[in-house]
Image 1 (cartoon, rainbow, N blue to C red):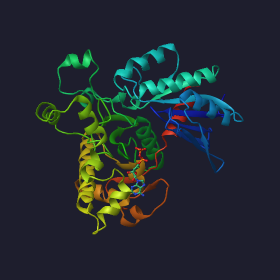
Image 2: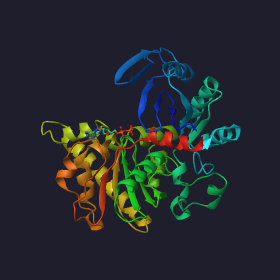
Image 3: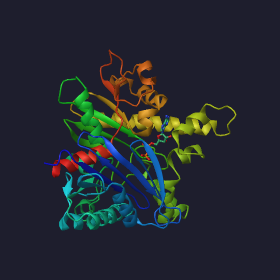
Image 4: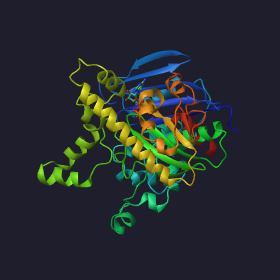
Length: 393
Ligand code: ADP
């Protein structure tokens, strides 16, 4: 009934808010971001019909910025609001129409995502106040991974930690992995059911094994820290290292948190930046004092990503191919080539020219005679949230 009107997608972070108004055919009518909320420098920048604008909203909080957003979109017909919510725990296997029970469950799961879920709730409540008659839908980063079997989601820890405390692997980036694997299955002519490994490589990075549209395993765990080397996150490390940091080196829990989440990964290894573009430039510059460390950061990133991809292949009954997405996966052809270079035993062979051709489109980059396919598929998390929201209204 609402196919001809748009979905407003809201992604509320702790100090930022992204929004996008998406039509039934997937066009973004207006999209923007508000950053540094709660400070004097708060600003809302957005693009509407190809024109960029920035509005100063000094001191604005989430509610005030949403009021400004609602002012900007008042000329458009909005069918529903889709909210990104980071953690749905085991309560949500799909997106959910928001009511009092759903709000309570999001609140309950805040203990698993203390920085994110409370911010998501602020966005939902502000949107409910502004648009009380519109349906509101929560789309969870974790929901897509609720199809994982226990062998993939259980840690080898005493059972009560799972049954009483909810300690298990949940996985994140679910909207991205769902979108990218769905597009790959639409585009690929390989016989179904398809078994994909999706590598979402951005500042945050994760891999996922998807068979016949269902997540069977993913590299992130209880938190988004597990798995690949990321921009500033260490990814998987020896758990004994944490004990060593605390008991031998005198770190507090907060210091360990800061070290592993904010000072490690590409930034920690290179000693200079978490930005893959800059690392590529530094590694190619013999004059740079960071040349060697930048190259090491790239090498470790690619090696760990390839190891994780090979682990995901184990989860699949059949392996159709590898999907690259995220800022690095979509744009950095040398990184794709280096990762695939580690994976030749798995029948992945990429066409050098197709890999190096720069275009923002979905494309197959494997050689014609490669046993497995390799695709680059730009992610569209907002589009997936709008898609999931539309399914529920
Ligand atoms: P986030 O997880 O914050 O959404 P993105 O998916 O936007 O991150 O990815 C950001 C990363 O993508 C950065 O490391 C950036 O340097 C990298 N990136 C973007 N474009 C390129 C490019 N052309 N070449 C190499 N890296 C790129």
